[in-house]
Image (cartoon, rainbow, N blue to C red; front, side, top):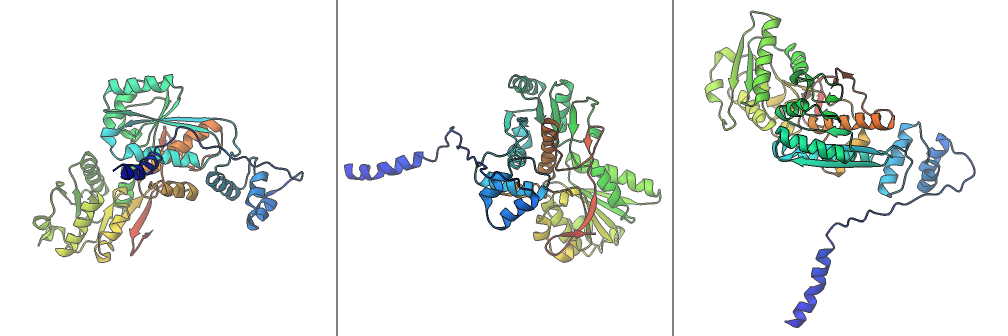
Length: 396
């Protein structure tokens, strides 16, 4: 028994090594010993010849060439090298009601972290978790944020929590990636909103609709609100237009009673305001019950690669999807991928990235990576129409 215990002891010791240390990793410095200047073509030549450290030694100043900046950022991150920065320390707090926003408590944190990793300025990113979105919890968190010296806050909150925070009249500059200013009662100069515009997307999609318009929605607040808006806007296009609305519960899996031999909806346009799994079920049953849709319309809700893998091409070939995740930064997207974080299809993570980019611009004065305009303190995203092809989304 003593021999066995002796043999197992190294295993216990080894297991302890998985505990993360609070001691930061040392930074590596690359010293430039070359007395000659090196312009952009010189820097590119170093890269082409694989002379990475010579490149980094000369790239210790502000660079105008974005491709060279991207290369420098990649190597300084991989090699943990102390890199050029403009001096300002970027301090951003995240206010996270983790029980209300679920997975986004971690993914929005990762989105901000991934963006700042691609930059050269030192940064401090700190999360403040609250159990609920009641005014008392938010107020206590804001007080702690102020005491810790943070002036910029990203707050992925529900509409209720956002309004509670607005009513507290915070002194910090707050960005809500999940909320649109149209839905909030605020005209404060220090509050910004980053949610995509489902109504603008609906307006563009409704230009492709024919009567009758069949609207499928779930029973969520977003689904019901969209169905009501789309119905009103479709009647505004022509008073003679007909609208048929179906509200589908989360547990509903069979649409026979809505679709089978229903002549009222044959050759109709269909608007689907349901999450991707429910949408895939609807698409397959539209084919199963031979509804012969003119087209199938959906907002950002179904801009998701799952719609490609969960449906047959024949079920989705008449589908048109609106998308506002248009302006991309490949380096930021890839850095998110390293953290298993999605900003290519997940609009809340994308909006968080856009907000972090805006704050970075405000703190450092550097140009924004995402040139999305602000109107009335709301990020205004473009809208494009796409069709789900065999393996990816294609321009409509």
